[in-house]
Image (cartoon, rainbow, N blue to C red; front, side):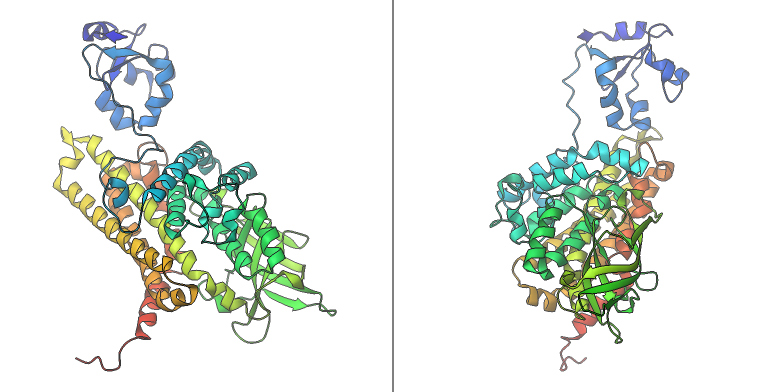
Length: 511
């Protein structure tokens, strides 16, 4: 229905209050009584255009939430109002997407990746409501969500190429197990990260991604298929239990131990693990145990939740829905056929997956960081300061320039590393990529640090407020350090990258 400006102006009383936002007319007569910001504030805009004020107070989803109930028409002569971009859309905000998705040419991506991203993004969008609710309530992702991800193929696609890709009925975007590559996998990680609900994101499978791989690679065939299938299809959940109160980056310093029973049929496991993501709700624990007197001599065991296994929540900077746990093993009996790899050779199994784990962390950190850059663009463009958009200030454009330059350059490095992974076997990756991946992880978390800092300054007080316009920035600045610590701290990564390079330093290189 077309409504004239004069008619809108006439509805400026307590009995009948109409306002316009983006040339759309809303009847807030009865809504004003329960307006969270106070009745008077809303009544004061009766008969007027409230677009600027609305954009200063609320995110667009607030308008979408109440449109059905309050929208009564459009202003006469107004142009068609473009629908708001949705979470499932490829964003048109500058630099909100990596180059290929903005229409740039890529030597790495093709139409298969485009179709895959579209279908995965649409699927992840269906999780957004639960993600937001769980991030606030702390509730773990439900088993139904895991099954849903398993059936869709998302869990399978968050692992490197392998037989597990055949377990779901199909993979997203028409991808086949034969055509699946590391770029498809990186997309799967990135799309989950775009939810920008840090605790829930890790609850959706941070423990899964790093926990199931040792089972698939080092487990006996029967175990790999049975347990792998249960986990990849979302029927059971798994986590990696390595870190301890006295051993983080120093993996060889673990104290949890396993001793063989007198008849040699089982191990008796005792010890504790700490900061175990997904541990609170995991059915399986891929656990590193000290198994000899020598430093670093360990056995990797698949331990099922059972008598003697107890988990307690650890309160961290992000939401409890990640299921971060303190895990206690007390005289836990584990059959010897639950060894992953070989007895006493668990250290090599633990090290095997570190490159992939760190690469996975980079994918998520960068996607989350780019989402924050998009938030800053939107806010700077709609926030009015001294009668002008915030983005009209050179200092703000300077901050955006630094953010964009850092994220774009690091994305290019990630794509280059991913291409190398795609074209190297495991042995070559271990030799040539351990250092570069470590440095890439270091760079990505340093970029997250500076982007978080500038985003907080751009959003001001809203960046330290858990709800409203700056809620994603608030979450990010509170949690981005997870990536800088987990999977190897920044300092360890920087040192590792240089030490690896020193191995190939030419003896005849002199000044």
